[in-house]
Length: 304
Image 1 (cartoon, rainbow, N blue to C red):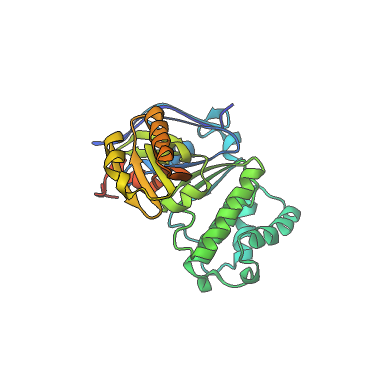
Image 2: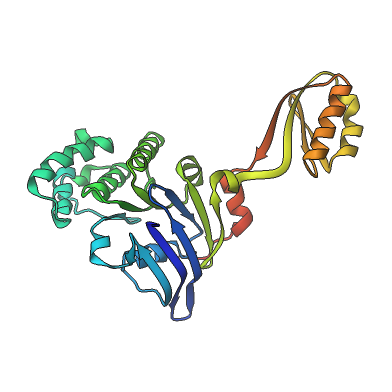
């Protein structure tokens, strides 16, 4: 049974079509990242799943029940973007307060709070006032708050926003640890390099429509373009190489070629070997996730 299932989800705000028939399925133990420019509809999807707003039409299923069902909501942790904690709290007292709201007993809170502070790397600052925390520390405290009641599903909106590289690595490690425990993570982020490192699957949302979806490997492979690392004198062969492929570019230690199919690639390798040029390595070229994102949605913003 999928943990999250959206079926032809539509949401209209007066004249704004925020979602236009979005369907997404997320399985147990997956890290699913939803990408999109501001105004694409990412936060609207999370709000519908959390029953903060209602869909105009379509279905949103969370943990096998309609979104908003009280039993499903008990098993969800949420870190919103630009969250705020009362700054008179300490990290410890804030976690104690929010854990109590989630129904965690006093004994469990005393056990879990130091564990959560240690997990997100702010154990030594747990007794300090939140007003003394940096943006990155507040962000990590927010992640601890989302996890304090041991939810099955985590919704995280820009969890590494404002966090330094060391802190981002620590948060990535926490998310991978949670995944290993069977937790499901639904992630919104603008930091595509971070998403690329931890996500099982990625969806690209544009103007309320799911434009593309797949694993990171599926999304970033650039078909039929290969980097060939060569040994031997091959400069004189470049005109013939160019004749055999759709495109060729000289790179350090070899060539980059765009071939029509595997048969043409094998024929090229045979030609090089016949001319005493050794193939010492071959890599299918990959794009970055950022390259794919820009190709799908462009670079211009769409508003808030």
